[in-house]
Figure 1: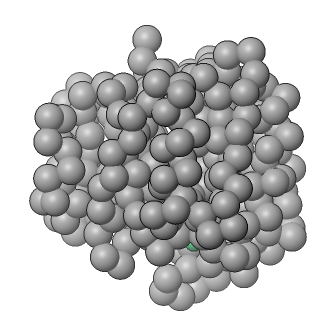
Figure 2: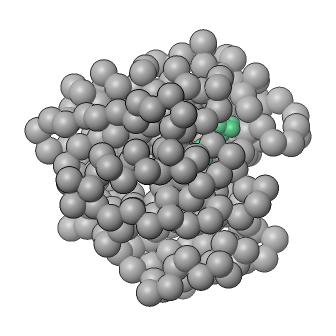
Length: 264
Ligand code: CIR
């Protein structure tokens, strides 16, 4: 079973009323909390359906973007690394996540450098390597510190480029199985997925690139029929989850959970 696609646990956090103040690159209107809560509940139920234990944390109104838990930590089989989000309004979210990971994991370490910034959305873990894209949220010091922390666990980092104007590296890609990546053409054109099978996101459906492979399912945002059909034709079991409200805040499937199999 691959540690990059199969998981015993996930952690999620319920959306808070303050979500209307969440960060966004372009304002396309305020998210509707009730609709986001309904989408979030469907997301959690789908994770649970695969047999995983989902730890659902309560809403944290002090942090409008705290529903996007992925950015607070990197979870590997050997341990978890607490991130230092590059968005100042999100920095405190990492400390809120730490005790929950400590309760489940034997080893939890932290990015601590005051000039180091890194968010989980910029990190794609595959069976063979950890790909990290620098972005407006993730800098060289953050990447270097992460490399020092996960090296002793046997993980090699490879730095890649996040396309300009794209929030996170994983905004534009996701891992579907050990050798297969779903990617926008603007990202795969950089050559960063050499050696992987790349399934292209349909032109005009770039927002479909952020999916998650979680046990036997691929969770993808609803509303991207061409990309859905391509993933189905490649033999994956797809579940479409409403994402209209998180999309207003540049969030997608991966952002909503931390996924892992803890080793005590
Ligand atoms: C932010 O700008 O930080 C949030 N509004 C969206 C975070 C999405 N997270 C992710 O892609 N991992």
